[in-house]
Image (cartoon, rainbow, N blue to C red):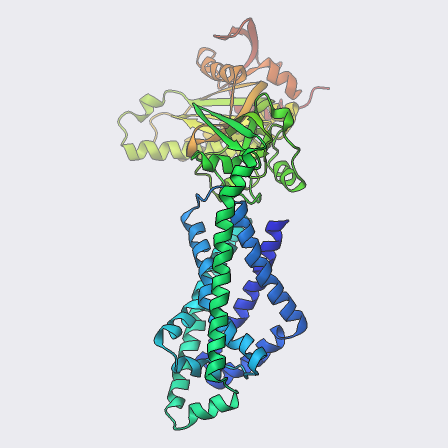
Length: 559
């Protein structure tokens, strides 16, 4: 909730900044148009509702930023996070005099605020003040844009609209600074007229020298107060850590001899950062993504508090089981816990989107397909490497399209072979029928490919396909960027052995009777064999289909 309030206060401030900078941009036309635009700007923001929203958002955003700094347990930030914090911290010292010299000067001394007054005061001020005033909009804009990037980068529409957003982020400050510079030039030209500045300062009720000194003291006091608050927050952090250790400690075991002991009150993500253990967190620990999720075990797992509503919403989106939690949201009580990160530390926004529930690992009844080109070594002999790659890519394209059209998932290409999984989101009967349909489509696609490449091949391509179904361990496996959803177990090994048996039976397809029965398909017209599978006890009943494309006619339910 605190994060949401801070974000929405930032939205209000961003809207104020956009309207202010667009008003500056009118200086590209003329000083008169610039002043006319300010009338509408004042109408929007200098009313009770506008001022309440603006100043409420300003103070809320400032104090919640300090609270966020206090709550952050580790100051190990990315380069962009440090940039955002640095820009945000510089807004007060850069903008204090501008706010005091305009809004507060109007309230205290009745100064008629306007662009002519602000620009004329810059002309008579030291050049450093002019540089500060022109750098302030750029600092605020960059700070806001980085914040919006962090808030939006997990949204599905963000990448689509990124070119437009980037264009706006570039054009608005450029037009604003150019408009302000041209207006300053126009006022400087007018200032060459004798008596112009004296008349202008008289009309706007410029304060006395003593009053101007008072305004400077007020701006210095605001800078000092902000600095004291910042230093106070930084000083409170170690004091908080000492106090919290009195309540007990949490010991986390990450495996591979990596452990850490930290005081209670910290999230698992914060403990990982303090211990220097790499941990993915695309949203920066705000609970908006799922990349920091971990599997929790250990003797004290039962002590863990249940997930909050926001955490549960994210966990449900990715189909996480009960032992998976968001590291940025889980603050374990004292005890010993085993932690296993589920995504590599380099995970990006793509990994934050919806993922299949099976990615966390579990047993599921699936159908497995293995296929391989027969005699590909002899076919590729004498061909140029380019021709071999071209031929394989054409075969993989035809095979992959057949598998995906039937409803399967391409698992991997192994040399000139392919593995596919069916039933990740469907029941056993549907999975087995999809596997048979994929085999039929693959055979048809190969026939079409042979006709297309008849002039380039000395002999047509032939394939062997093995199909088997059963309970299989399915999960996301691998390391770093090589991680993918796959299946392992006896069912996978058996399907691979059946593909090899197509050579012995001179058949295009060997399918287990287990899969045929689950599919509810009558393949009684095809040869039945009892085979021994290496590494498997007992004999396995299979059907040998000479030409898989013939499955078109028999694919009917048994009544």
